[in-house]
Length: 197
Image 1 (spheres, rainbow, N blue to C red):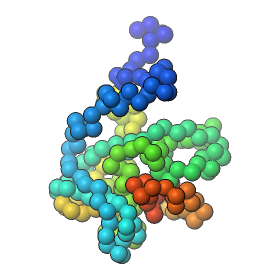
Image 2 (image 1 turned 120 degrees about the vertical axis):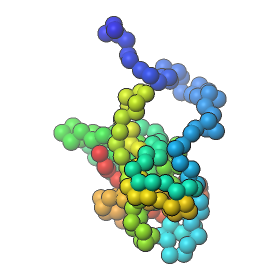
Image 3 (image 1 turned 135 degrees about the vertical axis):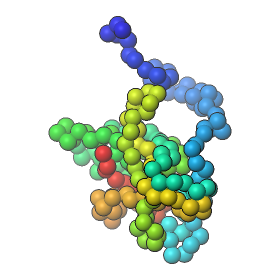
Image 4 (image 1 turned 60 degrees about the horizontal axis):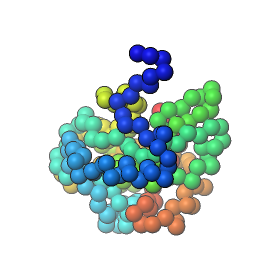
């Protein structure tokens, strides 16, 4: 096609003024979203769980291994150089890293996201991870996404757990102070500061 034509399968809102973006939500109906398997966000009551009092994501039916459940959704953030270390968000998942240019493109689920933001790390829970973050390309748009894929069978009622990665936990010691004054819905004691490509 013509050089000036941008190919897309998506509805683009970047030329709509920011103050009119709320209309996007009028065109969306979350009730029409269909997932391949049912999951449930639940408050954790087990006192031995490191996230007791907060939320986790649980299988609402038996889920086999090797299934893609949903994307890790949120706002795109682009960081250059040392900017990434000053980010106050605890829900970052790396989508793309350009080592030479020191550029990081992350998905930030702190203020917008889906059920994937409630996934907890397996450490301290007893079980091993039964899901992982899985880079893939959207078949409709061609966009790179970070999906959540099961790596073991998950029984009904079991928590869906991932491995955040060691680098995430190294950063926890001096970060995430912003979580203390967040509302309960957003709060999590173990959070997602990780860089995974």
